[in-house]
Length: 302
Image (cartoon, rainbow, N blue to C red):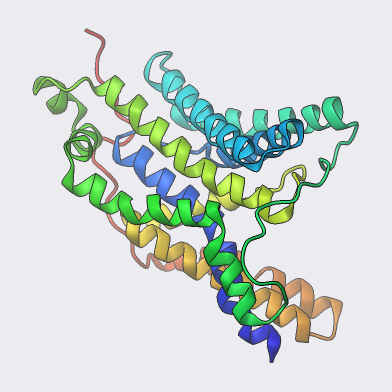
């Protein structure tokens, strides 16, 4: 019974990296830049947050370093796509591969390990104990979770109601028309990717702090599932976050079912549940909507 009751705090805890990456994808793609590199954002921000926390002894410094790393990766992607004219998919895949290799190399160089970093304390606020109430309180009081919830909740309003959001969406729908109105499309897209990187990085920081260390490849495909949530949501930040809650609930269900399954085969099948559900939903086209019309389009130089 306790496994089933713990699904609520587990769902919230698990959903944070997915939701941050998905909302980050919405910010990028509503501006017109395809962002396949969400895995790279999660990995680099996870590693940077732990490395900075270990070096400084401060979780706050680690958190800031992780966010900065995510911004650097996303802005780098924007510059490659918009300035260097690299194909967005190629750039995103290259960043993912680079992040995976670079974090493994950094683990070896800094900590003489190819698998994980030294442990860190992580934020540990709220009551102790393993009961559901204590677990839920710890999740809700976690500073990274609170920060992620704030930016995720604000994103729909910022995109729909502010001048920045209007300009950003104009660049994503018709970059040539946006430029004719005096909007600097490249600058707007770079700014959108900076915001995207900061939001996605919160997911990476949460992932590392929740595990109390960095593990090689710990993003484990979360960036790609977040991209699926972006498509399913119709490129809407609020809907993308809700889709990620569903993915988080499926993963929490997987954990609960593992506790009650009696065979290794059953456990293996249960572990596939979130991924199979994602593929089924995509195949059925549930929530399918048209992408921003200017997604992947560039403005001519001059």
